[in-house]
Amino acid sequence: MTCAVPVVGSVADFALLAGAPVHGWSGAVLPWIRLACSLAAGCWLTALLAARPARPAHPARRPSSRPRLALALTAVAGAARVVDLVRAGEAQGAVGSLATTALLAWLCGELAVRHGVGWRGLGIDPPGARTLAGRLTAVMVFGAVFVLAYTTVTWMVRLQAGLPSVAPWLPVLDGAQSAALGWRGPVDMVANVLFTGVAEEMVLVGAVVVLGHAAGRPLWAVCAISLLLRVVGHLYLGVPGVALVLLGACALFLYLRSGRLTPLIAGHVVYDLAASCAPSSAALNTWAFAALLGTGAAFAVWLHRFAPSGASSGAPSGAPGAAPGGGGRSR
Image 1 (cartoon, one colour):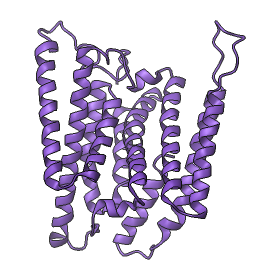
Image 2 (spheres, rainbow, N blue to C red; image 1 turned 90 degrees about the horizontal axis):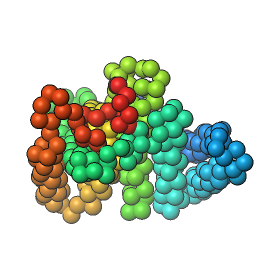
Image 3 (cartoon, helix red, strand yellow; image 1 turned 180 degrees about the vertical axis):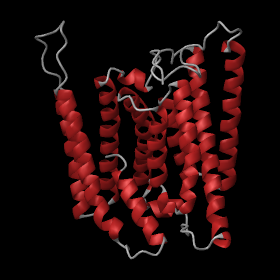
Image 4 (cartoon, one colour; image 1 turned 60 degrees about the vertical axis):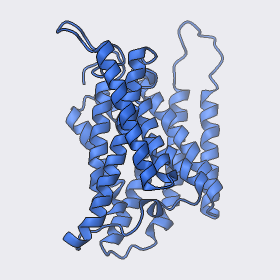
């Protein structure tokens, strides 16, 4: 559900770059897919919340209001999508994106709860997150994702500039990535950046890893699904979209090593906002350098204070090396 819109849109745009007669397909199909996915996510979430068993200690407890809240959020998302179908606009598009983002994030957490992992096991405020070691780990993950996103985009831009002269037959986007995304204004941009952060990190990393593990799938298959969906969702860039393998693989590694999902999402979102709002490429370069310095400083402090001193010492809770969830689950 999360990847339906980016995958369909990217495949159609890639086909258009390759010369296929699919002009206008994205604009005709994607609004309907957005509506279907928003409603599907909301209905699934509402059903999961309604099926939650009552706590044994409180058999006479009043029914939870969470299903009604999820249903109301679904109604908001659906209404915004319908209005956007009738008359496209920035406000209804942003409301639909934000409501759908909230539904998807909540659905990820609820599925983690249903499979015995919970929000903390998914990587939202895991055990040890509020200790000094945990906070240093969060800074390291945040800065690493920011720098990795910057590096990936730099590599992508170089491929975009160099491939037409080396291999002119390869499909390559001739224009800026922001223009290809079709943002209608600053509010729509922020809403879509938040959606992207949740979709690519909370869903394609956190939920895929945790639920794949719960289903008994091998780690290589889980990582392959995550990377495939991330790359295919960026094929609107043409062949340079393959560069997303770098960010996707490193995001998986950071999550598996640290068990921290919140700084992973935050690093992605903050980079996207910085790249969209930076007054110049020099300013973005400076911000990336500052993030690199902050990450290095946090790692130096962590290494000095919390690095194992001997073979018998284990990694501290919330530090790199702990499995996602901090519950001792193997990967």
